[in-house]
Each structure stands twice: as C-alpha cells, then as structure tokens.
View 1 (cartoon, rainbow over the protein chains, first blue to last red):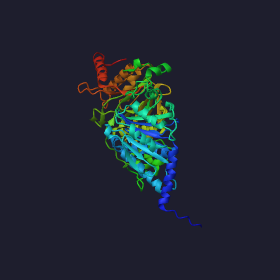
View 2 (cartoon, rainbow over the protein chains, first blue to last red):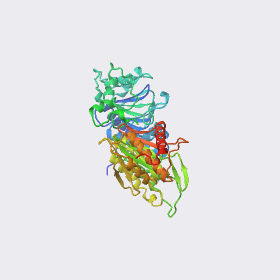
View 3 (cartoon, rainbow over the protein chains, first blue to last red):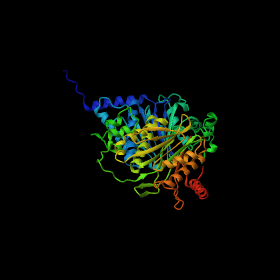
View 4 (spheres, rainbow over the protein chains, first blue to last red):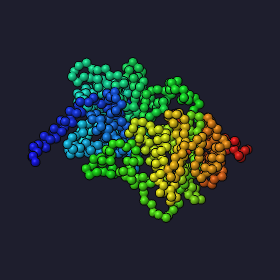
Length: 274
Length: 275
C-alpha cells in the first residue's frame, strides 16, 4: 500500500476553492436587484433549464454553476419551505432560515466531500417595504452574505458589481432596473463591444411586493419585449394576471381578448361574470 | 427544522431527486404529519363535527360547486359558518363531507401537494392527475374511515386541455369516479341530487347553474336536519365557487344575497321551488 502524499489543510481548501471558483466563472452571470415594487432576477439563459425559481410566497431562488447541483438544492428548498409552511403557517417561512440551511449544506459538502459544489446561490425575500427586502448570497464554501440593493453572480461578477455600484439606485422602475441589469450582462469582460441581448435570450422573473400570497412572476413574451424597449412607455409589470389559462406564475402581457381571437374554444369574456 | 441531520445540513431526503410529490416527501421525513399515518386506539368511536351537503354542477365552459355552512355533532350544530368548499389551486376546487377536522387537514395537505408539484415541475398538473392525487390521500385514510372518521370529498376543476369543467367523486376506499353533469355528497345528497336532476340541463349558463345549486341546497336543508339552509336573518349564505378558464372565484356576499333572497321569495308562493 502506498502512502498518500501529505497535503496541508490550507492547500487542500485553496485547491477546492480554486476548482469551484473556476467552474462558477465559466458560466453566464445572473443579476438580482431591488426595484421600486420588489426584486427582479435577470439571467442570460436561452434554454428551458431554469436558473431562477419560486420557492415560496415571497421567496425566490437564483443560481449559477452546475445545473444538476443547484437544481437539487432548489428542490430541497421548495421541500423545506413547503414543509415549514404546512406544519407552521405560511408567514413562518423565511429566507433567512432557508439561507442558513443552504449554507450548512454547502459548507459541509465543501469540507467533507472530495468535490465541492460548483455553484453560487441567491435567496431573496420581498418584504412589505423595500427596507424589509432581503437578498442573500451563498457561495460554494457555505459563506452567506447579506446584499444591499443588488448582486451579480457567475461569470465576471466582481467587475459587473463594481459597475453596478455606480449606476444602481433605490426606487428604479422595473423597466429601468431591467435595462441596467441587461446592460450589465451584455458587457464583454475582455473589454470588447457590449453584446446585444434579445428578450428570447433572457430569463426574467420578479417578486412583486404588491401581490397577495404568491408574489413570484416570470416575465416573458410581449411584456418582456415591451419593458426592454426603451421607446415603449411600459415601465411596470401589470397588476392583473394574464388572461391566458396556464401556469399562474407567467406574466406575458397577453390579454384574454387576444387569446379569444387565436383560440375560438375559449369563451368571450362577456358572459362569464356571475 | 425537523428531520435535521447531524451537522445542520439539509437531510438526504431533501436532496433526493425524482419525486415532485409533497405527500411522498412528508411520508418519508415526517409521517406523523399525515392524517392516515397515525396509530389509532381500537374499538372506540368519538363524536366529532361532521360536514354535510356539497353540490357541484357543470355549466357552459366551467363548473360550479356550492356547500351549506353547517357542521353537526350528533344532534348539536357544531358550526353554522363553517366553510366546506376550498380552492385547491388556480383551476380546481374541493368540497368536503364527513369528519370536519380530518377533512380540513386533507384539504390543506392537498393544496400544498398541488402547489409543490407546480413549483418543482414548473407546470400545472393535469385534471386527472389532480383527481388521482386526491384519491391517494383518501385511500391513506381508510383505517380511520373504518373507525367512523371518514372523509369523502368532491373535486371539480377546469380541464385546461379540453376547456371544460369536470367533476370527480370519491368513496372511502379512495375510489375516484368521473361524474357527468352534476353530483352531490354528504347527508343531504339524496335530496340535492333529486333537485339537481330536475333543474339541471346541458349548457346552462353560470348564473343558471349557480341558481340550480342553491335550489338543490335549499331542498337538502328542507328534508335533511344536518344541512343548514340559508340564514337570511344572520345573512349567512352558502359558499359558492365558480371555476372556468379564468380560474377559481368565490361569489361575493352581495351576489349571493341577491340570488338567495330571490330563491326564498319564489318559494314563498311556490314551496316546491324551481322545476
């Protein structure tokens, strides 16, 4: 039997951290920031494998890095929140509790498993007022930090955050916040021309402070295009939900009239009110 | 957090991939939270509040469900304001008859089950899927049902694929039956069904279906002592939910007051009611 080489603990941790950091930096960034009516999440993600997800009524999750690793943690978070909400009450589910559970998990994997998670997470909770909003950043080694106003993770995140520090301010409208976030994602870290990002390349979601109960909404389709278009007057997400039947978290800006034209099976809205 | 592993990290069951069912997850980590998994003392029966009559009727492009507001415990009225019709998710409702405490627990669990699936899968469960999940829960409750603590729900929802309302009924063994046109459950169900049989017709408007359901509940309350009639004095109205392409909505009190008062006035000159 051969003796393993001695590796000092410092070296071991440093190697693991370098490994995780490299993995995370390879991916595209996700931007999370407060706007006047809540918290917006923006990811450059043209695929259907999502990086942003609803966890509970006022809590959402965003991640960068290895998909299967963060997907596992996302599902664990939903299970944690739903069990908590079921055995206590919906109001007793908090982002801080979830962030702690995630931190413990990431930390244990980092120190005890041969391969650390190559992921970085954000857990955010929208409060009744902007001051009560919470945005937590969780890194591969289990460290948690409370972020003020905005955060960027993945890719060249530290440069991007530096840039946002100068331009982000409280009380941005959704359209302004989106423009800022997309501008940040479009910057070429090598210093070249900024890329042009189309709405179809983006995954955008909000936690909307004013909604009752489940506040998470994905912003897609015409509504996203409208919000991103600097010439369009749309600056906010509509308060009403979509007229199209389907997953309740989708906000596309399509009204029921438009759907009636496209699909004759759907009843006209007139005779439906009782 | 319960079920915590030694070092505070999320226990393995939380990180297990594959299942999108909250019920299966709780059965693994905290079975005591499930109504059907608790051990029961044998041979005893306890007197508990019981929910009574619920009716459901299909209408043009949707479905209506209505329930009276009474819970009884033997010959005592346990509650005159209980709600027995619940929104299960955006597009479905569930009404309950039987042991009220257990039934409400089953409904809460069912609501989380549907929302949990929606969040994990990023998709809405099909209407048959929802009906079957409810059947699984009722099946888990069979041991209690045999000791007199039965829960019998009725489920109705909007089928997003076929764009129409659907009604499902259950028995205590978890049997799930697709009902056509209309259905009722609970102690006054016989009278309510007889009433609906005469007043229901295909492609009713929603207003007409609501009126038919209110008539049916009135008839049930007429002949079944455990079903509460509308309480005009205290202004307690039956709970009425409508499900259509826009989702679930409960009728507000002013709409109900108008409909119920019209019904009561019509019965004054014609005790048999609409036909």
